[in-house]
Length: 297
Image (cartoon, rainbow, N blue to C red; front, side, top):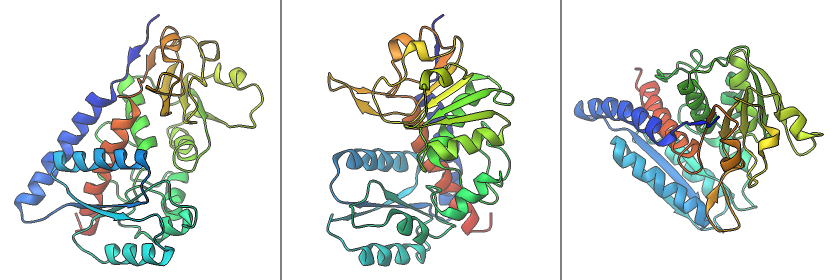
């Protein structure tokens, strides 16, 4: 068996085309969709991510507002900037690129963002709505406007990739490797909201392979190259690789041993070109949704 590739680039392009059409209509009627990105410090990976997001904004017709702050910027200055952006009608979404410098409280920064502009879906109340399934219905391939909250970008992108495979999530046994607040936990909640049986694995899990071999759908979001080997994967499983690492050869790779696992899985995401483009596409969708919510649409 050779796995079919779940092409994140192609799927993201379709989603961005939908966003672009709606943004063009808003712009034609004298509106403007704006996304503010705050970058604190000079982390090279963060700069690459921000540049990609700026490119996506240009492609979708969304105005990108970048705020580059030095690594010694005080927490008070960050909160003042967020407060100003919350009050600025030209800004529909606010994204603060992680990681932050050690002296900045991640939770406090996330909570400072207006719930109507929380396009990263990091606020506690946003996560709470996801936990109880209150996000305007289960995500669909169309990703229609959300009535009550935003979806976290990476997990929502993963859900779209799984949906595109045609494999039913309902009734499937799903294993999520990684329990971060950004990916692992919301990923598990969203799968559960679509009636999957979900197991979350982490650094204290005993015999990881014994658990992952049960998975009909396996999602790895750890950030450790080749963590998931072929002997840890069930024949015919859908395998989603959220990891982004540098291999010994310096090339980008994921958590999955792609070459060998792709000989056992039914569907698999590549790295790069899998989850990453979908994460950014969902950010564009969330920013459009934020504009709609703020303008009574």
